[in-house]
Image (spheres, rainbow, N blue to C red):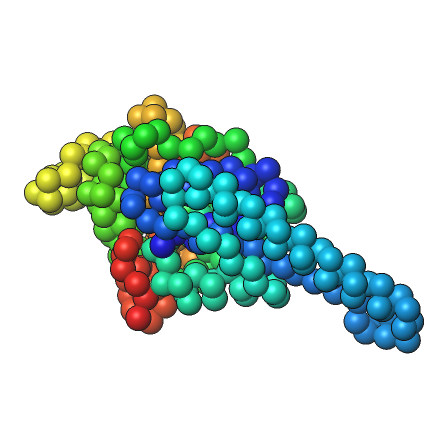
Length: 308
């Protein structure tokens, strides 16, 4: 099952469209999720204003009913595309309820828009998407506003690797998607620049060359393992700033999807906030699937595998 969270914004509509097409490719059903968040100003500020409190509560009930109707209509429209879909309406805070809904349904993937009601800077920095990426028990696919649904089948998936356990789990997810969609994988590694001399006699350019040689050998090893699983794969080794090179290489390869871990060398805080994954999500020419270690298990959930 794929859960698609929506707040009925234009960006959320793009995420719904993308999620529906992806569900067709994977043979999955879609759970359309909306979290109704009542306004915080009703209680207790107006507790003494009986009529006003009554009017506000009536307004909230009407708004919730309207949200339920929109969600049901969206589910019907999604089903008309040939995808089994149903609506799920929950009450509370999106940052709490979205991960809970995903966990309860044992979802294989969560799809989010990254330019909803609060704008891309708020959605990615300190708000809904960041919190959900941290907490969701499954991979999170972020769709930026204006990104088109995938082609009839996913043709190309770029996988960002730093050879950490987190990126190994992201690679596992990418391999499963490739197996289910016959997509090719592009294994991407970036040797980042460092503008300082290491010692008086050993300059960074010398170290970078050695690191590039080692990274190339590691990438060749991973490439060979992937190909042994009957998955068509190529590699892309580059030097520079990680997020810029990942975006550049994915763009040049016309990748339909970027897959990357969110718990690599710097951890979830650095990866999501102000670092590689957040910048890739902002700039990528295609949706980005972020994968993290499942808390307490050391691995991410597999597509199609229900949570225990």
